[in-house]
Length: 157
Ligand code: CO
Image (cartoon, rainbow, N blue to C red):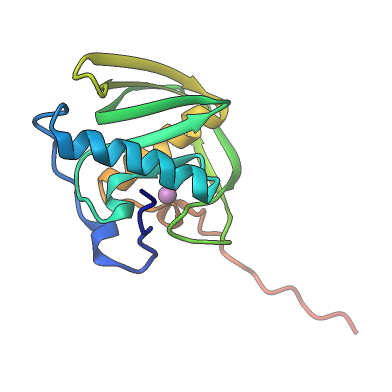
């Protein structure tokens, strides 16, 4: 079932999501399936549960045909290096901003079978992991736009 994606501004997107105690709960299993269906419809890279109105620590990612369902994910290591790239969000349709992210991250999580998992991500996967895990803490990509001070240039005559 395709779910409705919550768009900014909506207070749900700013809430800190609650930890999932039982990953095998039917509601969570069904939510994971529905979130993947929704992600495919939207042609997105990742989706976090708060974006479909469920304030729980769950996000999904699909990069290069590989699907990840991450329950209670946590970034456990990150590179020193950061990279700047265009980023979008399904809660901000049609909006893209240059966002700086760690080039590599390591994430620990619980998989959909309730087993512990670990991902080492780089490139787009690293970016998606940081973006989606931020959603679980009510952090949105617009919070990370580099605030550049604009100095007006003198008008040439
Ligand atoms: Co997003």
